[in-house]
Image 1 (cartoon, rainbow, N blue to C red):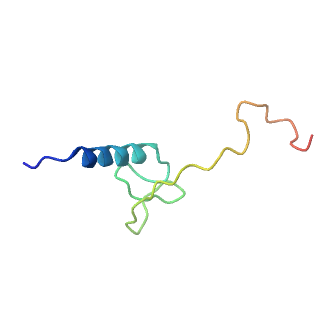
Image 2: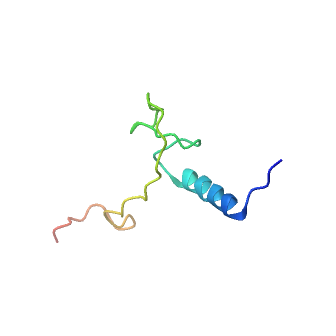
Image 3: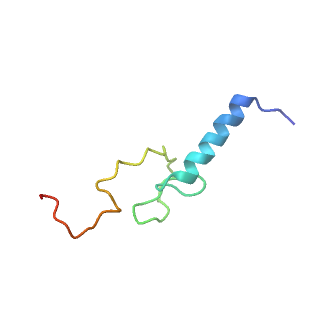
Length: 67
């Protein structure tokens, strides 16, 4: 049995954390379609950072944004 270096283990843990937090891929790291189903092509997800929030979700939604 081979021993992994600390850097290899850290990289493995970072990839696992990125897969868990990514909404674009399945638990194995494969890219999903926008509807959440598996893609026809096997494509690894790059786990992009989520886009910034467009508005404060705690604020009321009935107010107009131009005021």
